[in-house]
Length: 352
Image 1 (cartoon, one colour):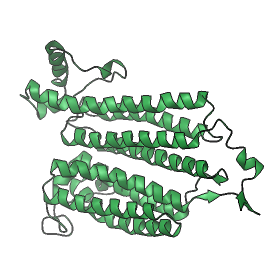
Image 2 (spheres, helix red, strand yellow):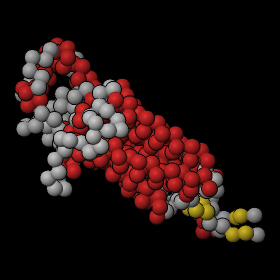
Image 3 (tube, helix red, strand yellow):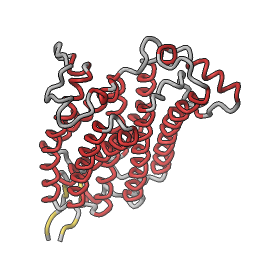
């Protein structure tokens, strides 16, 4: 029989609600997932620069009459994207791209409220188990930072460029996915605590850390593909326009690995198999740890993601498939966090 030690049981005062907090965090994770999906739509429809100002509070209200719409449209007409790419765009077309950027920002505000208000309530009720307050505050701060990163990204495309910096786009996307992983990991810790007061937070094992790094590189390359429109570099698979190594790629030093669309596309499609190999091993470790559902989730997510990636290429960047590709990428991150957590679970106790 395993009994928690007095020190361990003290981590869960009678007022603590680890199961309720875990459910809340998973609900927020779903909102972050929706945010990633809408972000993909925003990028693929070239909507991200339609709102040229950052108004965290008043910006939640869209234009309500024709005069306000015209005023917003006139602001958009001052930036390079309109002057060089969208000259002559109709007001109706502007409303379409404005809608997606507005929904994207609205979701960001909703996530902020969905996290901050319940966190304050749980804190006031002393429902947060010992040791988890700082982690939840860190997630809140990271969410606030993400809003600033979003504007930092948008601002890169308002004066000299016709699109946003792909470096800043990568920071924005990877931060969102890191928040998603943090929410899932923390929720799993709290569910484990609710089921067994003797449990301690899971640790990140060395191999899980290596897998996370490999996946990080693949996600970074994916963000660069999106930012550089590198998906258009080839519409054939497995060869790129009849060649294994892209004919138009120009290696001009390390910087070209991030700036040349053909090279980035090439790296993204082949590094994926390194990520698959690592994820297969992690999934097997999770299964041996007794977490078969996590193993199934990892295999299902990366299998679907590979098929979608190939389909996106071969259909010439079909927008629906491209959005699904980004959505399933987020599921790969969530399932990887689940599997890594399963491998790193720890329980304190003593046998009697």
